[in-house]
Amino acid sequence: MMQFRERRRVIQVIRTVYDPELKRGRSELVGKIDKAAPAVTDKLQKSCTPEELSDILTYLDERHNRLRNEAVRAGAETLPAQMRAAAEYFRTHRDGDARAFATDIRLAWEELKTALREAGFSKGKVLKKAAERAETPAPSESLAAEDTAAPAVSPSAAAPVRKPRARKARTAPAAMEGAVDGAVSAPGGTGTPPAT
Image (cartoon, rainbow, N blue to C red; front, side, top):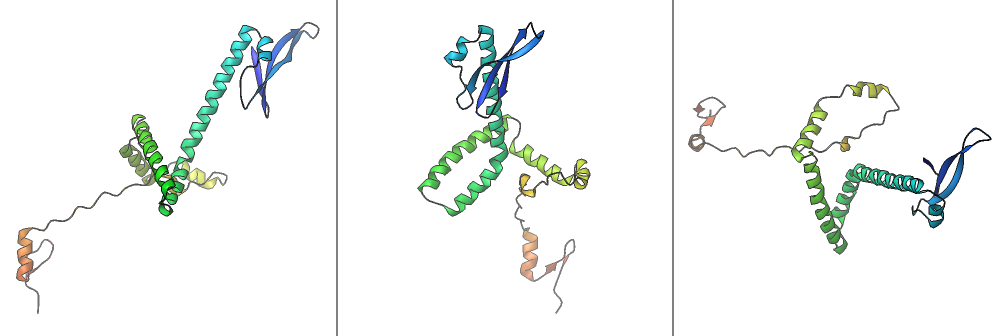
């Protein structure tokens, strides 16, 4: 089994070899892999067995996937702030660059909405949960208030909740007739002429 140590710019590939004099295993540096362009060099390939090469390739694949997942997560975490910055940009710019950015953003936004919906985070569900969270304090909030090391949650982090549209009130024909005759109608009462 190979071991891997990540240093500043390289990944050290290490094998453990049994030393009969020490009567235990000792580490032996087999080679190095450049972190900026991780690939198995010819020199490293010649100094490894097929099983060790398989271990190296598996490690590099897992490392690539881990780094990619971290980058994707970081993108999702920073997206709300980036969207707010983009909103500010579009409030002040209306040139050709802004038009090109807007086209790319609209296409990416449609793709993101589809992915959110497919993952079970549809707009209605997300906004409903955000509203429920805002209404009911979590039990850990009282503990977090006592703990000064806990990070504060900014109010802008919660998703905005849209208010329902107000419907226009329709006036009944009878109420209109009373208003025409000069009668004032109190709620639930009958129309009475105004006092003079």
